[in-house]
Image (cartoon, rainbow, N blue to C red; front, side, top):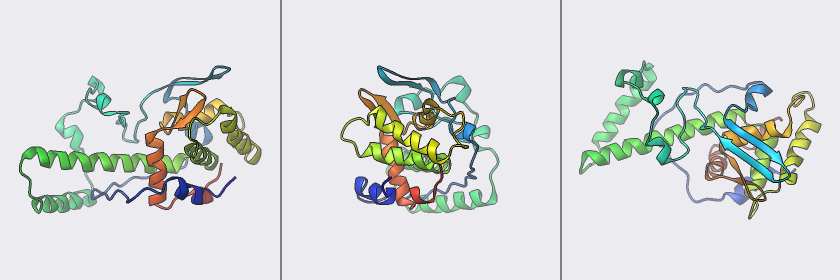
Length: 230
């Protein structure tokens, strides 16, 4: 295996980093194998002679709200996703209220020519914060070999062949046999597919835009393969 911290920097030497003014408090956790490699986000996942195919459910944040796959999906909330204003606000900690106060002061220092501009800015910051939270949760759950697979796949000009992807699973099973007992290659890939970090394409697997953004996030927060198991 290569040094992923170096390879991430080589593959993802993007200019600048996203700066967030919103603050998110999130308790992260490490679950058992059954939780980390859950298949509930997949309607269907098959690996056969014709290649890899999957039908993916939107992943959900810990709050239960889905992180939309795209803007079209977000524009059509289901009846179950609708909330009242009181439900959306919920209870807030003192820290959250303090941050709200600071944001109000910052908003007053910005010159808006229309209410739409204020809404656009708030939406942008809310979206950026949700993505950051989603990546923080993903970072807490992804296993070392899964991250190595993601980094390696990102270096391919085209699709990563299924056989190459399976090498990372085989390495994980050989190195951590007790952890991966009863977990096959399909369940191993389920986490990456369910989190929309990779997708099946003709010829194998390809890293999604969300997957590339996740790797960029890891560079920004200085989280690499070196301090992970599995």
